[in-house]
Length: 337
Image (tube, rainbow, N blue to C red; front, side, top):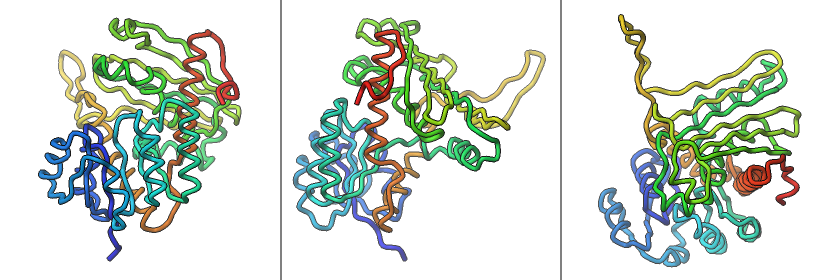
């Protein structure tokens, strides 16, 4: 039998509790030995539900435990970087939710500590683990359909997040489009230039908070390809997630996933199952697979599928898009740093 990797989870809110349940129920290669949250009662509830023995309020209590090989960080964004540094200095491998931070200098400092410590770092870009998106990537990378020419990503939420979340998120480009930036790089490689335009069209309260709720972003890739991303904070018909890569000899497309594939037809037309209403439903298998792969990388000493560079580049692209939208001009990534 393969050995199990002892892991602890810091942060047991929405994402942290999902990861903890997945680790306990779906990833037998891992053993959750402790959970941590500054809201001790929240961590205790998760631990009681899943039979986890150790519950702590201060994450520093985990760092001296030699039995813990890896730590999953699912705290608020403003804490990611300094927790990463402490965990790295303790010699433990890291899975960290995105974004690594909202400040590039802070990210750079944290990544430097991680590199010096020689520990593994995986960033939680779960959509790379979607089976359809991966299939598109593999088809394009194989060369069977020729040279990539145009990438198109549609990502629209069914409803806006709470306003308290919006105000602390860094805005649509650093919170929502950040996933699409990473997907674009995953599909076609490095991006050199970004242009973005946006407006407030579906959620006036977001405009009052100083952000846009609807945006279109164009990308210029280093390989010459062109990309288009469109986002909306409110799509009344459900969680809209589509991907297409048009190539010189064909096209690879990943359409929306529905609850089932049944089509009902009658005098009033054709009817299909609705789209998922929430990203947790749409990407549930991806959250399992990304952490399972992290555990395998720790156990087998392999490179992680996403790393600090991927986390940093997504933030760089977010700031480039924000600058492009505000200044109404294309922005080269070299302008951001």
